[in-house]
Length: 392
Image (cartoon, rainbow, N blue to C red; front, side, top):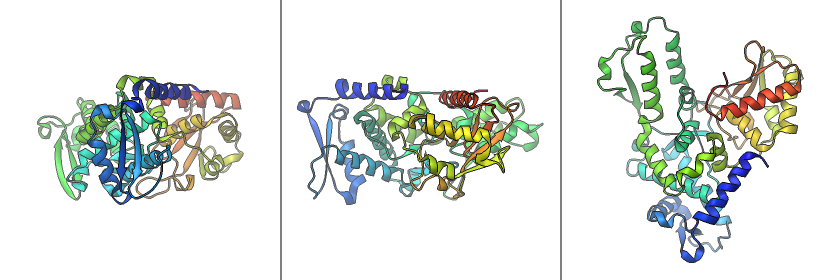
């Protein structure tokens, strides 16, 4: 068994055998109407004191006969998280580069004015309870939220997934000779439902010009605002709800990719569908699957990688382990454009290890001289990506 599976088994064992209260010490019956699923579920879950969150929960759909031997619980977690993550609800939106990875809607207060923060606290509790009970959550979140849950540092590259356009515009500033020519200051113009609002990135930011000397501080202030301050109330409630149930130290054995797999499940990936919907560019353009390196790549994935390693490869290249229900042919960004998985051939002089570009769902694959070399370098690249640091 792989190390992730051992960690997951240990985590479930601690929750099941040490932290969950025995049935005889109390249990909760949660009765909900299908037609008012979220309303009833939120009322029930948010009325529970923290001590009751680790009791057994049984579920009943009003007017339906059914004994909850596990199936109803599984259905409840699936339906509730599906509805909350649905963009029509106004709390979450697809990220710019991957429609499977959801980001918090900065305008959730406008979309859901009465109780948007209660929904985030509720979702935190539902996600925590799903982890605690070994159930699955029907929504993948952008990478940096898993990092926030673990208390890991957020990197500049994490901005690319939720907001690719802004990430690229900030990155382009590094190539400008004299920043002062752009007449920028320490502010950001926020657009919410057609209304512009100027946000100061530091106290008195509108009076602080951006210069070559303070550019690093400007980039850091933007990162902090976009990844934390902009959705701080929502994120805070999400984490408070989550840690109402899960003791923080229990999660320290996982990296952020493993946490996504634990919450959403290890996907069963159809390799034939993956191959059929992969494009080739760079040195593999024209040759495609006939190139030796590409053949070795698919052989290693198909014959040697287990489902967990395949899921980690997906996380490495696309930023999420989620696969659209209709398969790889509809992998896209939230602008609706299809961004199929792409293998881009590069020379080894450019990079010894495979590199990923999550905004394009693209992997840069060096032209290797043997299958062994490809296997070793690919495994290292995948493993290193889970640390949150670039291999170079």
